[in-house]
Structure formats: structure tokens, C-alpha cells
Length: 387
Ligand SMILES: *[C@@H]1O[C@H](CO)[C@@H](O)[C@H](O)[C@H]1NC(C)=O
Image 1 (cartoon, rainbow, N blue to C red):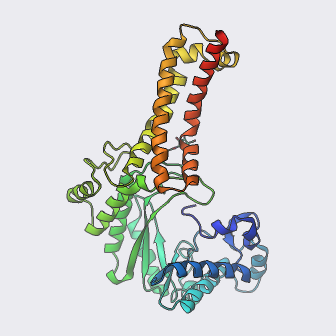
Image 2: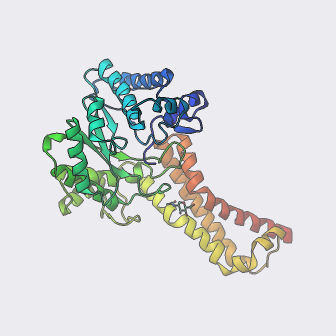
Image 3: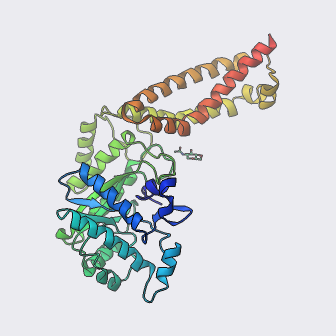
């Protein structure tokens, strides 16, 4: 799974569950139900209403793995000549036609992954190439240029006149990642530049730089937007300048107020002065040192492992002298992290909904912080029990 798959955010809810292709899976819509298509049309209308003067509209359509597995689809597929591919194209055509007829100045875009394996003949006959511009996604650092050029050739022979690319400036490198490795994303963009220079100039309509917040509607958060602003700046500048160079690097550093932009490490020494850079600084600290400093104290400090083990903690036994060897460290570590976390919380609240802040803290901060709080509390209790 890659980006948030569009129908999931509706189909995961009970109210819309009856519109699923497969009862248990919220990933795909039942294309045979008029109510399902009506839901999609309503979603399109709502977005259009908020964005006047649109020229393109992305209708999604990626990763529809279970299409064809619903009861109605199985029946449909039994008819002569029907295939899952045709079912997919049939649905795309219905949605794209709706956009084209209701909004004549808007061109629908769709993810291309469902089209990749379809034969040229089937694609050409479907009528889809005349309606939609495919967006080819690939987020890898070693994206294969030659196979992209061949794929684009195929799409053109089928009748698609323009294509889009989709790269990634964050996400795509780890489902629970909290920091962005800029080098990976830069390489991805440099590969796309190679693809762009290997095809006729008038074929490429544009490139969308995707930035993932999570892999799908059920997964944890990956990198937060402020954390990835340097990566976004590097990728945009690389695209604008047709490559990456010392001059591009200096330009990004100047724009973001960074003294030294590092591409191939998560631990950047300079985090800049751009809006949101405080979040990058604090997330970097938490990611690198919170868990490791707590583990260091609880798992590698001999006084804790030897004299304040779970056995001692449960029975509130503490050696009155040994206690002094680690209690001050535990208390100061706890107060240091509480301060960092409070700053991060406040910085995040400026830009994120409180649910997002809560989720990120619960995933990335609470496990270690609670472990540390617990040991300080247990020490307190043991000391009290002794007195
Ligand atoms: C992702 O999750 C694994 C398993 O819980 C953990 O070991 C790892 O540190 C996490 N990675 C990040 C970047 O948080």
C-alpha cells in the first residue's frame, strides 16, 4: 500500500460499508452500485465547489486489488468477454465522463498503476485514454528510467496524449518513520528528471510531489510536514534547476536559514530558521535520544539493573545508598524530557489538529517517557516504604 487510498476514508465508516466491493475490506468500492457512484460524484462536486478555476481533477483509482471479488462483480465477470480489467476501465470511464460532462474545462487525472498491466488493445478500445491523463507514480531512489520510458510509449500508443509523474518528498521510506532522509527523495527526483528528458517534451503535463502523512487510513503517522520542509525545498529546487549542485544546495540553505544542509543523514546538525523548524529540531532530539537515553538508564545502568530490578520494584525494596547512585540521574532525565516534550507539544499545536498531536505523542513519546516516569515513581514508593 502506498498513499491514502481515496475511498478508504469513506468506506471505513459503518454508514458506507455496504458500498464496499468486498464486505470486509474498505479499500474498494462496489462499482455496480448506483449509490456508490453517486457517493463518488458527490465527493467530486464538493471538492469542485471549494476549488473554482480548476484545470485538473485527480480521481484516484489506485490499488483496487479486490475489484472483481464482490458478488455482483463475480456475476458480471461470468458474462462472455468480461474481465476484471474491463470492469476497472468501465468504472474509470463512468467517473471520468462525469467530470468531463459536468465540468468541461477540467481534465481528470488518475493513478496509472491499474493501467500498467492492461493490454494496449484493451486500453485503446476502452475510451479511457481520450478522457483521462494518467499519473505515473514511483517513489524509489533507483527508479528505472528505461522502463518508465517504455511505459509512456505504450500509453501514447493507446491514445493518452499527456502523462503526469508523481514523486515523493516525504513518506515512502518507512511506515513509522519520523525523520526524512533527503538524499533518498532527491535521488527519486533526479531519476524523474532523467525520464522527463528521455520523452518528447509535449508529453509531460506535470509532476506532483507527494508528501505522505501516513500510508493509509489505518496506519500510524509517518513524517510530519514541518520535518520534511528541507526535503521539499531540495526536491523543488532540483526540479527547477534540472539537477542538484553546490549552487542549489547553497540556495536552499539560504532560503531555509540552514548553515549546513545534510542529505544523507537523519541527524542534521542545523535545522534552520524556517517556520516549523522548531518542530524539526525537537522531533530530531526525540527520535535520536529519548528512547536511547531511557534504555541506557533502565537497561544498562548497573545500579538499576542490579539493585532496582522488577523484583525489587514490585516489593518496594531499595538499598539506601545505591539509590543515590541513580535517583538524581533518573529525575533530571525525566525533567529534561518533560521540558522537551512540552515544547514540542506547544509547537505542534500551532500547526496540527490536537488529534494529530495526541497520536504522534502516543506513538513516539509516551512509551519511553512512561517507562521513565514509572521508574521515578517506583523509586519514590520504595523510599517511602523504607522510611
Ligand atoms: C518503528 O517501529 C519499530 C517497532 O516498534 C521501532 O523499533 C522503530 O524504532 C520505529 N521507527 C521509528 C523511526 O520510530
